[in-house]
Image: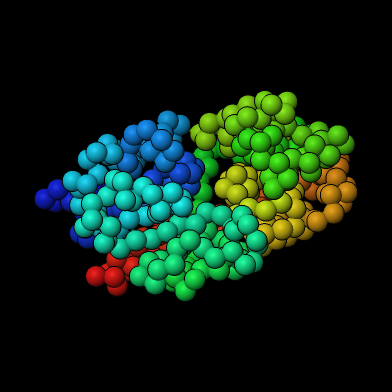
Length: 330
């Protein structure tokens, strides 16, 4: 969106001042998509997790600004957006002024509860805050302690010129550091299936499992587009951005019928989800043997993703939620 300067603040083309959001760099891909929202984003930059600022590998817009940690206290913000427990419980007291800590505060929760799946109380227990979940499943599982909640479904982008071909008769898996994260990320499922089905693995640490290594965000869609299907072995997490991106690219998705996955994948239409791993193996062989069926699923997956994970819808949702929250808090 076109912007213009106005006494140190930026306006969008409607003449409204763009709200200024302080947040941390927690999940690079999500942050990149979040910054498609017509807001001004300020990222504290320094040493330590969450302080990476505008990391390489992303085409950041001019609405995204790095701020040295020691200068954060000197800036004016409209809202503080937390994305990690440490941001909320530790970092705000180290880098924010007392006045900044009284600003409207939103907590963006990326994950379902890691401890007990239904009885875990979220550490944010504040009726003056807003707890934003990225899936309906996550909101369902967390005990939100009376903190107001909302859900903003994912939004993703892939290059227009990248199209599914499915020419490689194998599946592609995109998971970071699977070798360290074990059963929750489906390490055992992945290893069992790849004994019977050709699978390539990409992501940070993937070479430890014989994978292809890390692939940049910009290069990933073109790489995965050549595989017959996308396989998500993860047992328990949010709906991964890599799944949304794969569907937007046009890959049929195969995965476990758990968490939010069951709302995105309709069997025989956009891919296959099962809780029986042996059935998943059968589905994969079917896709490897029938390229025409894979192409049909590809068209359906891309059409669905274009509607559900539309980046403009996502940006509009975030702008509406932040604007309404700030307005109603003051």
